[in-house]
Image (cartoon, rainbow, N blue to C red; front, side, top):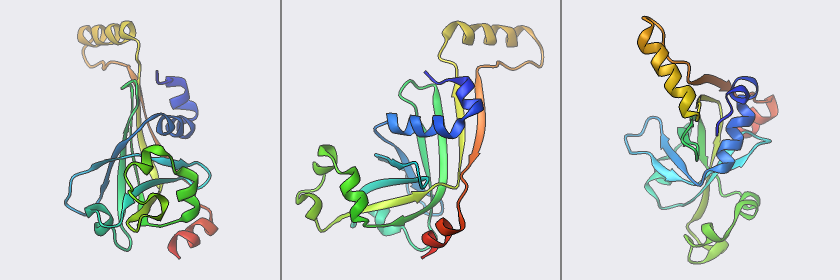
Length: 178
Protein backbone atom coordinates (compact mmCIF):
# COMPACT_ATOMS: atom_id res chain seq x y z
CA UNK A 1 0.00 0.00 0.00
CA UNK A 2 1.38 3.42 -0.97
CA UNK A 3 2.31 5.55 2.01
CA UNK A 4 0.92 9.06 1.58
CA UNK A 5 3.30 10.45 4.21
CA UNK A 6 6.29 8.94 2.37
CA UNK A 7 4.97 10.38 -0.90
CA UNK A 8 5.04 13.81 0.75
CA UNK A 9 8.30 13.49 2.71
CA UNK A 10 10.55 11.32 0.53
CA UNK A 11 8.98 10.82 -2.89
CA UNK A 12 12.25 9.82 -4.60
CA UNK A 13 12.87 6.95 -2.18
CA UNK A 14 9.26 5.81 -2.49
CA UNK A 15 9.48 5.95 -6.29
CA UNK A 16 12.64 3.85 -6.30
CA UNK A 17 11.06 1.34 -3.90
CA UNK A 18 8.03 1.04 -6.19
CA UNK A 19 10.24 0.53 -9.26
CA UNK A 20 12.09 -2.23 -7.42
CA UNK A 21 8.75 -3.95 -6.64
CA UNK A 22 7.39 -4.10 -10.20
CA UNK A 23 8.17 -6.62 -12.91
CA UNK A 24 7.54 -4.25 -15.82
CA UNK A 25 6.42 -0.78 -16.80
CA UNK A 26 5.70 0.90 -20.12
CA UNK A 27 8.60 2.49 -22.02
CA UNK A 28 8.27 4.80 -25.00
CA UNK A 29 10.16 7.46 -26.88
CA UNK A 30 8.97 11.06 -26.80
CA UNK A 31 9.30 12.07 -30.44
CA UNK A 32 8.81 8.77 -32.21
CA UNK A 33 5.33 7.77 -33.22
CA UNK A 34 5.26 4.24 -31.83
CA UNK A 35 3.40 2.62 -29.00
CA UNK A 36 4.91 2.29 -25.56
CA UNK A 37 5.99 -1.23 -24.73
CA UNK A 38 6.38 -3.30 -21.59
CA UNK A 39 9.95 -3.44 -20.30
CA UNK A 40 11.49 -4.76 -17.10
CA UNK A 41 13.37 -2.02 -15.22
CA UNK A 42 16.71 -2.47 -13.49
CA UNK A 43 17.29 0.55 -11.29
CA UNK A 44 20.67 2.03 -10.43
CA UNK A 45 19.80 4.29 -7.50
CA UNK A 46 23.28 5.82 -7.33
CA UNK A 47 23.15 7.28 -10.85
CA UNK A 48 19.37 7.76 -11.21
CA UNK A 49 19.44 5.44 -14.22
CA UNK A 50 17.04 2.71 -15.27
CA UNK A 51 18.55 -0.07 -17.36
CA UNK A 52 16.54 -2.27 -19.73
CA UNK A 53 17.66 -5.42 -21.55
CA UNK A 54 16.69 -5.56 -25.20
CA UNK A 55 17.84 -6.88 -28.54
CA UNK A 56 19.77 -4.59 -30.86
CA UNK A 57 17.43 -5.40 -33.75
CA UNK A 58 14.18 -4.29 -32.06
CA UNK A 59 12.13 -1.34 -33.32
CA UNK A 60 12.75 0.45 -30.03
CA UNK A 61 16.54 0.07 -30.15
CA UNK A 62 16.55 1.08 -33.83
CA UNK A 63 14.50 4.22 -33.10
CA UNK A 64 16.85 5.52 -30.40
CA UNK A 65 19.22 8.05 -31.86
CA UNK A 66 21.39 10.85 -30.54
CA UNK A 67 19.49 12.96 -28.05
CA UNK A 68 16.53 10.57 -27.74
CA UNK A 69 14.22 11.06 -24.77
CA UNK A 70 11.89 8.54 -23.19
CA UNK A 71 9.03 8.16 -20.76
CA UNK A 72 8.68 5.18 -18.43
CA UNK A 73 5.30 4.66 -16.75
CA UNK A 74 4.94 2.73 -13.52
CA UNK A 75 1.83 1.30 -11.85
CA UNK A 76 2.47 -0.06 -8.36
CA UNK A 77 1.65 -3.67 -7.56
CA UNK A 78 -1.24 -2.53 -5.33
CA UNK A 79 -2.58 -0.15 -8.02
CA UNK A 80 -2.42 2.79 -5.61
CA UNK A 81 0.79 4.25 -6.99
CA UNK A 82 1.42 5.71 -10.46
CA UNK A 83 4.42 7.52 -11.89
CA UNK A 84 5.67 8.80 -15.20
CA UNK A 85 9.42 9.26 -15.47
CA UNK A 86 11.24 11.17 -18.20
CA UNK A 87 14.82 11.49 -19.34
CA UNK A 88 17.36 10.87 -22.07
CA UNK A 89 17.79 7.30 -23.26
CA UNK A 90 20.64 5.64 -25.13
CA UNK A 91 21.66 2.21 -26.36
CA UNK A 92 24.52 1.13 -24.09
CA UNK A 93 26.00 -2.38 -24.11
CA UNK A 94 27.61 -1.97 -20.69
CA UNK A 95 29.03 -5.39 -19.79
CA UNK A 96 29.24 -4.43 -16.12
CA UNK A 97 25.49 -3.71 -16.05
CA UNK A 98 24.72 -6.87 -18.04
CA UNK A 99 26.55 -8.92 -15.41
CA UNK A 100 24.95 -6.99 -12.54
CA UNK A 101 21.34 -7.41 -13.71
CA UNK A 102 21.54 -10.76 -15.51
CA UNK A 103 19.07 -13.37 -14.22
CA UNK A 104 17.16 -16.44 -15.40
CA UNK A 105 14.23 -14.38 -16.68
CA UNK A 106 16.51 -12.24 -18.85
CA UNK A 107 18.39 -15.33 -20.00
CA UNK A 108 15.16 -16.84 -21.37
CA UNK A 109 15.04 -14.08 -24.03
CA UNK A 110 18.58 -14.61 -25.33
CA UNK A 111 19.44 -17.95 -26.98
CA UNK A 112 23.18 -17.50 -26.55
CA UNK A 113 23.05 -16.04 -23.04
CA UNK A 114 25.39 -13.14 -22.35
CA UNK A 115 27.20 -13.95 -25.64
CA UNK A 116 24.06 -13.36 -27.74
CA UNK A 117 25.08 -11.02 -30.57
CA UNK A 118 21.79 -9.09 -30.31
CA UNK A 119 22.04 -8.52 -26.55
CA UNK A 120 22.20 -4.86 -25.63
CA UNK A 121 20.87 -2.53 -22.99
CA UNK A 122 19.07 0.77 -22.88
CA UNK A 123 20.08 3.32 -20.25
CA UNK A 124 17.49 5.91 -19.25
CA UNK A 125 18.96 8.73 -17.14
CA UNK A 126 16.16 10.22 -15.08
CA UNK A 127 15.49 13.94 -15.33
CA UNK A 128 12.17 14.09 -13.51
CA UNK A 129 9.06 12.16 -12.50
CA UNK A 130 5.42 12.95 -11.85
CA UNK A 131 4.02 10.81 -9.04
CA UNK A 132 0.49 10.03 -7.86
CA UNK A 133 0.06 8.05 -4.64
CA UNK A 134 -3.46 7.28 -3.47
CA UNK A 135 -5.03 5.74 -0.44
CA UNK A 136 -5.74 2.03 -0.54
CA UNK A 137 -8.19 2.43 2.35
CA UNK A 138 -11.69 1.92 0.93
CA UNK A 139 -13.32 3.50 3.98
CA UNK A 140 -11.27 6.71 3.60
CA UNK A 141 -11.93 6.72 -0.14
CA UNK A 142 -15.69 6.36 0.39
CA UNK A 143 -15.72 9.07 3.06
CA UNK A 144 -13.84 11.52 0.82
CA UNK A 145 -16.17 10.84 -2.13
CA UNK A 146 -19.25 11.34 0.06
CA UNK A 147 -17.87 14.60 1.52
CA UNK A 148 -17.11 15.95 -1.94
CA UNK A 149 -20.57 15.03 -3.24
CA UNK A 150 -22.24 16.93 -0.41
CA UNK A 151 -19.92 19.97 -0.37
CA UNK A 152 -19.99 22.21 -3.41
CA UNK A 153 -16.50 22.98 -4.72
CA UNK A 154 -14.74 20.39 -2.58
CA UNK A 155 -12.72 17.62 -4.20
CA UNK A 156 -11.94 14.28 -2.57
CA UNK A 157 -8.61 14.14 -0.72
CA UNK A 158 -7.56 10.61 -1.63
CA UNK A 159 -3.91 11.02 -2.45
CA UNK A 160 -0.77 12.96 -3.18
CA UNK A 161 0.52 14.29 -6.47
CA UNK A 162 4.15 15.39 -6.51
CA UNK A 163 7.03 16.08 -8.86
CA UNK A 164 10.63 14.91 -8.42
CA UNK A 165 13.60 16.45 -10.21
CA UNK A 166 16.75 14.33 -10.25
CA UNK A 167 19.93 16.32 -9.70
CA UNK A 168 22.94 15.58 -11.85
CA UNK A 169 26.49 16.47 -10.95
CA UNK A 170 28.73 18.11 -13.55
CA UNK A 171 30.64 14.80 -13.85
CA UNK A 172 27.41 12.91 -14.54
CA UNK A 173 26.39 15.43 -17.18
CA UNK A 174 29.78 15.19 -18.91
CA UNK A 175 29.74 11.37 -18.69
CA UNK A 176 26.25 11.18 -20.20
CA UNK A 177 27.18 13.48 -23.08
CA UNK A 178 30.36 11.54 -23.93
